[in-house]
Length: 491
Ligand code: B12
Image 1 (cartoon, rainbow, N blue to C red):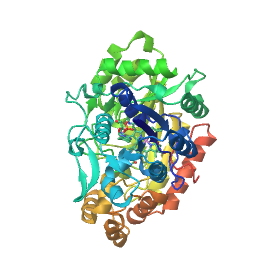
Image 2: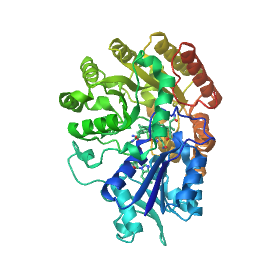
Image 3: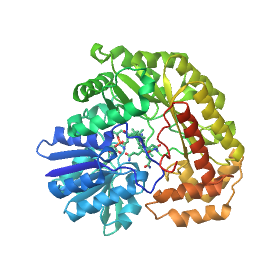
């Protein structure tokens, strides 16, 4: 059996671009599991971020894989469908996975013949191995965990465990370390070169030999009350042992020469006890490894910053979201504040940790005044030298985030707006949303859903949001800072 796994690149129809500085770990992890547990299977992995669509089509034509698995995000859905079509034309079985596919599984299977199966798992390694067994006739379809598929009765979704049972403190140990040799060397060279082009300034001339993405922890302390725009399916805390974390890092250092690691843990600051254990277990030969992690201002303390320094953290990704207190509280929660964002930023700067800051424009009740406060906040971050980069983009209401739920359930939106104290600008449009989007699978096309959101919930236009994003980017660029990856194409 021959399996081709590919992460689709962002579509041309979205204003959202990314700077292609970090590898997609998802398909690499799936391919690594296949290589380890199914050495009889011939497996390929490619990242469309750094590998042209034409190359993917050519691979499919020439390799004629039996299975093509595609990693699908909201912004890469059109490209994913094109790859699926090419795969079907060459006779392959197609499998979709990742956030957009999992959230939209029913609608996709109802409307796209080129998609055969959808993996709805948060961690897809074991379910994907089960899919292969099913395709070989060695497992019943009903025994494939986290699978969505068509039956005579409609769309069926299997649930079942996605990983072997283990305590949450070590459950991710069962996911094998990434085998980076499954991506061509040209991928690794391109991530490194893109990264260096954008972020050399952060490293004060220090040599960046390679960049890598790892994921040895998942979850966030806000799992019970997530941010309004957060669509991450599973925010429960799941970890690897410190030994496994370091094995992953050392393997990356050895295979790709990487010294920069993006740990994609949803919220590293939510697990200070784990960071302490990582520091204690840090091996001597990992001393040069530097980490980029997600952090929250609310959880930033002197103690946390010291632990980060001991671990090797040089850059943190922090959601600033807004420069206006009310907006920030609506977007995140009652305990968040702009002052806290500033205090945390200064604490990191004083320890020489730079911030990749992001702002979400177009929160509920956004006005010209509140938008201006976000622009002012971004200027403050630039003027005070706290950032490595700053990005600002319009809010995308993902369907499984509270924002998306408002669109599907106008009564919920109205009751939340009363609690939060803002008024809905266009109630008529709000009530059209369920019928407009309920059965659609492509609401990210042309950023349509973000435009509708802005019309309904903001007192500014979508163009105002793009203009504010443009102002933030150009101010950062003018002062020599990278501009982040959000909405770069239209700007
Ligand atoms: C690291 C990361 C990145 C990296 C790597 C991108 C990538 N494609 O992996 C970078 C910085 C490049 C990036 C870019 C972007 N990102 Co990003 N990113 C993440 C983050 C923080 C972690 C992802 C990760 O590495 N997880 C660890 C790996 C091992 O697992 P995984 O990727 O989830 O894959 C597993 C499962 O999903 C499943 N699976 C995935 N694909 C497939 C395919 C098959 C066939 C099967 C069976 C299973 C399967 O199995 C995998 C292994 O366990 C997530 C948030 C999150 N917690 O998921 C956001 C997230 C995925 N990103 C998001 C977005 C929006 C983007 C950008 C559009 C942003 C931008 N401004 O451009 C781009 C898209 C780039 C692209 N087309 O690939 C959104 C997607 C929303 C959505 N509904 O689609 C997320 C969910 C964040 C969010 N909501 O706030 N991102």
